[in-house]
Image (cartoon, rainbow, N blue to C red; front, side):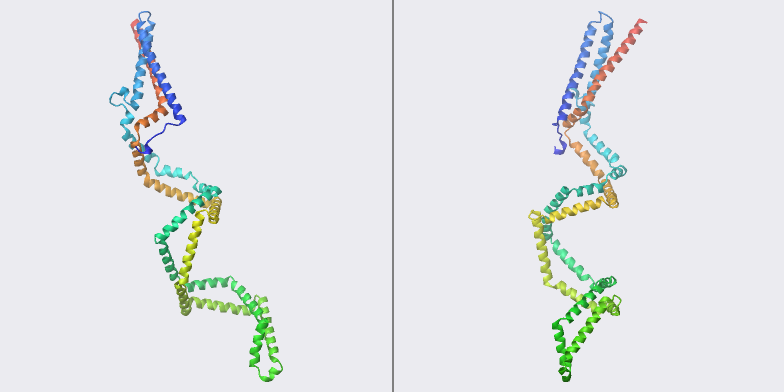
Length: 428
């Protein structure tokens, strides 16, 4: 017998019910013995006075009623006095049929789509999940449990070749990406938001600062001096020209930087947009970007970097799982709590979760209900009927014993009524 087919009667409640059952059984047997004794005494005293005839009739019928109901109660569970009387030990004899009918009843009346769906709709799965996740201790436990599983998942990923497949698949997908249109679209959005003007302002500022550095001015002066005629060199015209050039350039840069609508900014816009258009359509630009992409993906340093990142990630996961560091656990727990709070505040999302789970569980129950019926039937067939009968007797036997009391009383009253009628007829 499997563990699932055994029962336990060790609880205090079962012990109390068993004691009460024994008491009521003894009392019912005492009543039966008393009616039998009363019948014998009344029959013996019948010559003394006619009233004992009425008492004997009552006691006789009460004894017969009590015996009949005792037989009925006992026959439900076992064979009376151990005799092989037909149609007794009803529960034991019909164990297989009871099992099949019980499984069929549950399948038909409890696992039908309508009742199952109605019951599932009463459950707010979304709120349950939200409340569960919002509990910090539960989220900590969930994060700790997930971290214990991560090292094994990482090892399984490596040993199964899944990581190699993922890397190869990612490389293939990256090779298939057409970067030129992507880059052009990104730059076009960059320009549309005006961010290129910020870059332009930074460029003007750098040029202004560079031109006004002593080293830069000295270098420009040397270049100008080398190109000037000898006569002008005598008058130090190079210094004048350099100062004039730097002053004019600085003034121009300041003018452009201070005027958002300066025409030079428009020229810069047109230049950038022209470059963006060429980047997305010019074959030379497209081929060049594609070549750079292939060269980048083929670099051995990239593979080394990926292996290093993966090794560091695995080491960090292992240290987190062993409790050496709590960073990842705290982060996961915080993420779970945040998810629970977000879910608690989003009634629409909770509704979608509820509807989705109702659909999934309804389909699952519909697919498995025949299996559930078979499982219940098999489990009932595997039960130890002696223990099952003991369980039934302990829980409802007390009420069944009162049938014996009722049988004695009703039988006695019926016998008394019949005897009274007979007595009246004899008088007539």
